[in-house]
Image (cartoon, rainbow, N blue to C red; front, side, top):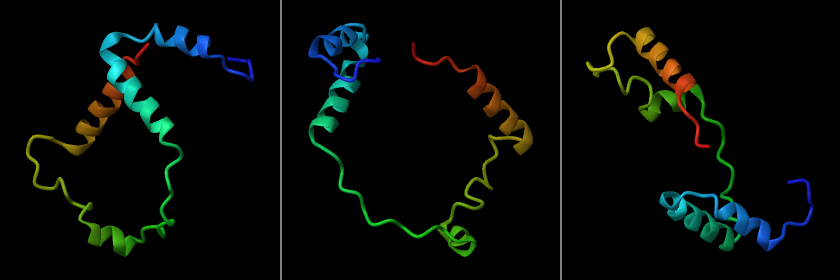
Length: 88
C-alpha cells in the first residue's frame, strides 16, 4: 500500500480475502496489536561456546535412530524447505 494513511475500509477489504479457517490467527494478531507494544526484557548477553556446551543443545539428537545419516537428512530438509508452498 503506497498510501501513508490506511483507511478502515482498506483493512476490511483485505480481511474479507482471508479464508475463514484463518480467522483465529487474525483475531489473535489483532488482539496482540491492541494490547500495545510488548515490554522488552533486558538484553541477554550472547551465548558463549562454554554456555552453548552447557545448554544441552549440542548432541541433543545424538541418540535418534530415525534421522539416518546427517548429511542426507539435512539435504532432505533443505529440499522440503525449497519446495514448500507458501500461503497465498
